[in-house]
Image (tube, rainbow, N blue to C red; front, side, top):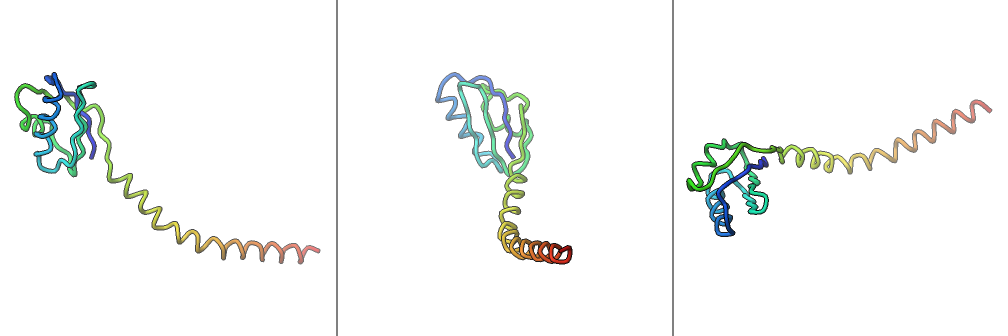
Length: 113
């Protein structure tokens, strides 16, 4: 899952490094992208996490606000991979169906004439 949060209390790149380090130590967090410019953090995790769990990992100086957007990552990957797995099958069946269509079409034209 990917979730974006607003964060306050950061004033420098040292704060960014501290927040990123503390959040990466939370279980199930795969990645934490922290931005000083937008005062936000984008967290990629294997499971949904409560804001309380994330806040407990941070020093008191930093405050997380409710998530601005949540986007499941895995479902999009699964759908794409399923279609990629079926692509060779589509290629295999394309030729016989095209040949059958042409055969039936030519038979139909010969029966009319």
